[in-house]
Image (cartoon, rainbow, N blue to C red; front, side, top):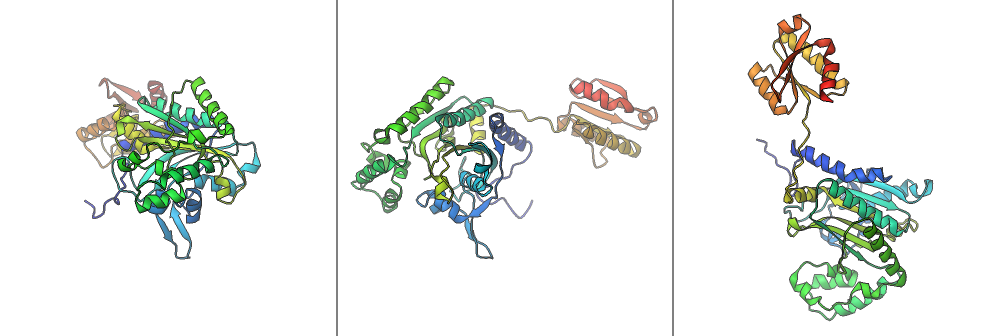
Length: 420
């Protein structure tokens, strides 16, 4: 055993579970590809100010959970705690908003980092698949992204999730609500941290999970009562488009999400089988974020879906995804000459697109056949010196046990036919 372990709050992805994780990432991304989203990858660390400005100084993510550090050259950097700010920074830096039609549609898959108290479903390194539509203000885009996430979850076999939906207003109506909420909060008995948060971003107080705080929030002014006519009409269009697409949702007037940049549409995917960590994904519109990080006005909308949480949701619903076998064909050489010939045959099969493996380490027949069974392969290729003298190999169907001789020069064609 090694002296070292994975750092606290992290874990290793190992076969065969890693194959399921890859399949989940692929399923979450597939609807995005069909909808014209292009893949983007950004560095895992960025200028710390990108997140403090974009995500918000008042958020727990920035004030308590960010991995920030100073480099030897004196740069202040942070491991990315979320994906949107990085994607928008990359799009602005490359002038993607000037090179073609808006919106610029991008998707990403990668790890994020937060210094959290580790628990099931909440890790210090976690994986997300995310999507951003940059540079257009259109309720159809908001609805599109929610529908794509719904399609992705359903394609995995998930059913017991709910979509919570709200509008956070815009720069016209939100300040009026913010002032009314602050006035209400000043009359409550709140701890010092919460009072500070109420002054910086009072909407974050609504998101407080403590029962003692929630009890005091009864009777707090509701954002829905302060929305301007434009925001009401916009939100109604999002709701109508979702309903027309057969996507069910629940209006949740207290849904604010944990990032400061959201405006108007905000949504969350929750799964009731996950206990306190019930959110499996979420997102919303962030029309002012580009300006916050020094760019032009670029109204945008996006989401991030948690890969770790999605796996837990699949487990909670008992949805089993059988990983594909690592190889279709497993070669069992009997003797040194057979090893050379079958090594060549395996290389040839791989080059023809057939997944194939070989019994390494000079195993005997019994141990090699056990390795073939464990590999999950459909066929074993067995050859000894007598077979090779006749230009043959034995092809054994590992499901039925049937064994047939096949000419070496016809092996690729025979296997391709059988594997169809």
